Amino acid sequence: MTGSPDRKQDEEGHGDPVVRFQSYLHGGTSSLLSTLPTLIVFPVYKTVFRQQIHNTPVHQAVGQLYKEGPVKLYRGVAPPLLMRTLNGTLLFGLQDTLFHQLSLSSQNVISASALPALAGFGAGMVEAVVLTPFERVQNVLQNGQNDNRLPTLKSVLVKLHAQRPGLGYYRAFLPIAARNALGSSLYFGLKGPMCAVVEGQGLSPLVSSFISGTLTSMAISLALYPLSVLVANMQAQVGGEVKGVMACWRMLWKSRQQSVTLLYRGGSLVILRSCITWGITTAIYDRQQKQSHERGKKLKCTCHDSSPSVLPCYLLFLQLGILSIISTSASVFCAAMFHKKWCLGCCYGERSVCNPT
Image 1: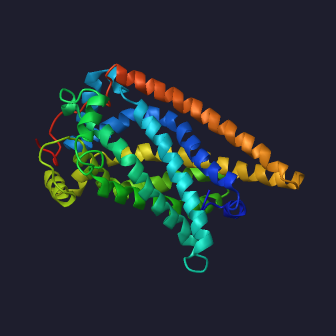
Image 2: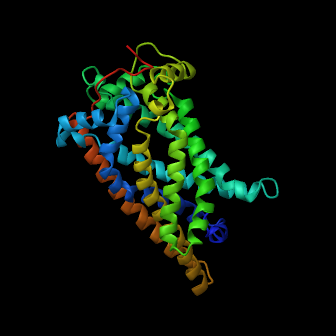
Image 3: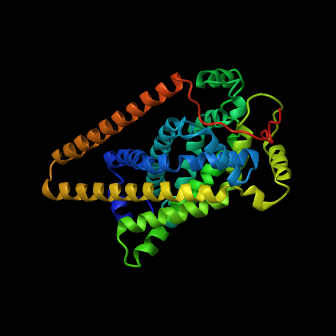
């Protein structure tokens, strides 16, 4: 991928629209394949959310999950999986597209080493615009205090639709945009150099990609975790007294007793989750990109007419078909869950500090 040790291979395919489209497919596929560890660490995600909202120690959050039992433990896991696939498609695909455009239009203007990070920043901004409504609905459903008033997905969507975007679907958009843009910029800016350093130790490319993705995501999650806490508190409630970003931050900081330790409560679990999912996602994506470039070079060596592009197109559509089948199956599963009024987990304890009513 862009910024990796195979950068020369990336540059060779910049003029091929099939290669550009493959970046979107590879990003979605790698994120989809990494959903297995997401399933494994989903209880960790629910534990972190409760710590972010209610400022409870980890043993209390785990105790609440234990009392609910195994049936409720994975209730509502399908929507985050679908959202993760869309996230990977946008993040990797848009970053690769923006990197290509910047490489053509900013020659000798912007340092080549800065282009991956700059393209990642733009991709993160677009990602925030597309995915903020998903995160808003997810956080509302995860807050158990909304169970009686907003028991189903439909009731949440109707309630949010009745409000203007800044209070409804796009509540907390500014901190989400800052978190996603900075996180994507750091990820694409650091992953390549870190992968080169790790691979220089004699490790295989696949292991190097996994380690670089793990270390990069660890640093990013640790640095940007306070923004995630702020977003969770701003989005957990619907209605009531609504405060701005700075007012919510002051209330959050006060509720954490002006302690960095309390502010980072749950951060270690976020790092664990990010290391697993992003390490696997990075390894799969880099391997897919490398195989795609190698396959393209072989086809160019064996044929010199226009026919070689047919085979990559067939492979491309085959990938797209498989991905569509899996996504459709997950969507049907998600719809069945919501039909049974399964929501994304329950939370107990204190109210959100940004929406105390």
